[in-house]
Image (cartoon, rainbow, N blue to C red; front, side, top):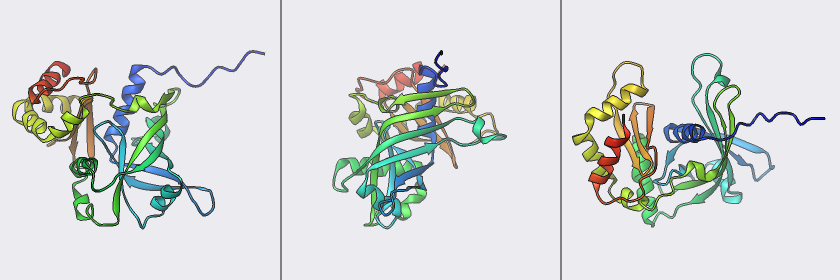
Length: 249
């Protein structure tokens, strides 16, 4: 008897890029945790951001049920992907299995996450500094990508991360990079947004930069431009500008 054909496709660069874009452009996600009282899966909705290395981050209150659950068992699962018109199952979505890691408020990492999260979710300024709120990095272990009917892929967690030695220096220079992108390459950014967004012209702003690309946002809508390869050596903002001008066709 012959084996049944696998429904899982071989993971290629196009699938990896789609997975990264789904994660980077998601403003919120369904978060599933293990309820410590009964062992059942418990799902909730959380605002989502990403760290400089591509690891998803969430801001949680100590009063929430999912925070209590993750303090007992750090295993979690995220689901991202916006349904569009028609059949919701025909649109891409990504499930990520991850481990939640709490970030100490006194560390430089917290300051970086705070800045990146507020850039993506400005209204979070109302509560982001409350004493009972904390950031969790959700380190990806594995992921399941469904790109639509007949397009299923399995990915290791590292396919979602940006593992570049330039991460820290780019993070430290993020404000200057954004400023120079807006001042020197606003035409390229507008062209890029126009190519990915077929609707009426809108005012886009940069909500994040990293060694793998940059994010644009307008209202609740986000776009992601992924470089063909990560920046491995960052010297100054000019080196980032060079990557942008050579990456956008």
